[in-house]
Amino acid sequence: MTTVVSEAVTLAPPEPLVAAPRRRLRPGKPIPFGRLVGVATVVGIWALASAVGLLDPRKLSAPWTVLQTGIDLARDGTLEANTAASLHRAVLGLVIGVAVGTLLAVLSGLTRLGEALIDGPIQVKRAIPALGLIPLMILWLGIGETFKVVLIAIVVALAIYVPTHNALTSIDSRYVELAEVVGLSRWGFLRKVVAPGALPGFFLGLRLAVTGSWLALIVVEEVNAVDGLGKMMYSAQDYGQSDVILVGLVLYGLFGYLSDSLVRLVERRVLSWRRTLAN
Amino acid sequence: MATDVGQLSAVRATGLVRRFGEHVVLDELNLEIAAGEFVALLGQSGSGKTTLLRALAGLDRDVTGEGTLAVPPKVSVAFQDSRLLPWLRVLDNVVLGLAKGRDVGRAALAEVGLAGRERAWPTQLSGGEQQRVSLARCLVRDPQLLLADEPFGALDALTRTKMHGLLRDLLRRHRPAVLLVTHDVDEAIQLADRVLVLDAGRIVLDRAVDVPQPRSLRDPAFHEFRDLLLSALGATATADGSTR
Image 1 (cartoon, rainbow over the protein chains, first blue to last red):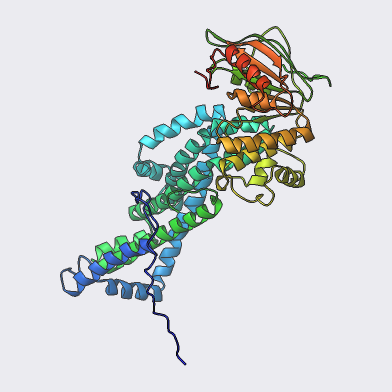
Image 2: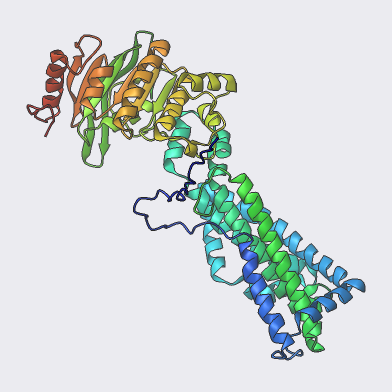
């Protein structure tokens, strides 16, 4: 009995069926954890430079020294107390600023009277850097907590006002026409057309506001404070402790990054109807 | 000020005047549409078609004139773009501004062949599907008058033909009066009971479509009517049926 074994046939792997490939204009697939790659690279260079002695530890401590200092500061409670004080100021200023900025944007974006009364002064105020107000604020409010929170709130309110106001006033007139045709009430129009249409602008403002609140926090804490991360860093400068300064900077950065990520996460969920180049 | 009209006529407008600066767009225009009647409105660009439609829709607050403008209380408008709000899901777009429940919205979507797509975002639909959602949004309001401003103008020929069939079906069931603004002479003849030609703000031709049903492009009566409309529009028909 003979067995017939058919000859093995090697199949060519299928060629991708792309006729005359076009130039890709989208940025392509996102790298997983892409943002972290850049951060890790910078930290890596820093560690390497410290290890081979390129960096003077009095000017810039090594990453592991910073980490050790951070742990020590956390153990003795210094870090916790200072971080709590800073977070309290930043969050309070942010909440007040977002509320005030949004309210002003809504009033000036949706009413003619509000536009006349509010938009002008705010545009003038935008020309003055908020941090330039520090002397006046100290004169008015003293050097305590109020001055710090008010200054953060001003920075935040302006950051959120501009994009939100812009989004409210540039609602597509075709949608306004549609709302009139289907007989939406004024309240229905605000809820179904204006608010969702302005949300992308609001979220842009919110992201600017969150980073703005941390920026303002650093400045007001370094002007004068009895506690807070800025105070901790400012004292460390007097004693030449670059590691303590770096612990403060890392925490500032971490809080800034985390809060921005949080806003982006919420934004993605709320604006899931949008399809942009990013996804 | 628009007032309600009785049962017999859906639209009664006399002596409508609309000026944009010096330019007179609607010139003492008179128009009457009977309840349930399908009127197609043709005219060259700038002849005042859209202005007239906006006046009837109550979107234009600067229409003057000594006459009257009476439209029914329930008017729906279909735009050339489907004009769906991108941040509302399909069903929410259909029932936008309606107090009554979402069940009627679902039924309207099923009627235009989009059952099951209630939770889709408008951007996930094709152009034809978006326009069908827009039709559902019009019909769910039980309009006595449907104003349509070139609703099929942006669709491809095949989709447009399907939409004509769908529209005829829907109208047979809901029976609103219709004013359809269009550029497409064939579309006007196929769908309408009566065709108006607008020129420089006045109606220059007002004729019932006497082509027997089903209105086929092969019917000589169709061609005769088409030539009549084209000459009223100021275009001359060539032997092969195209216009120049």
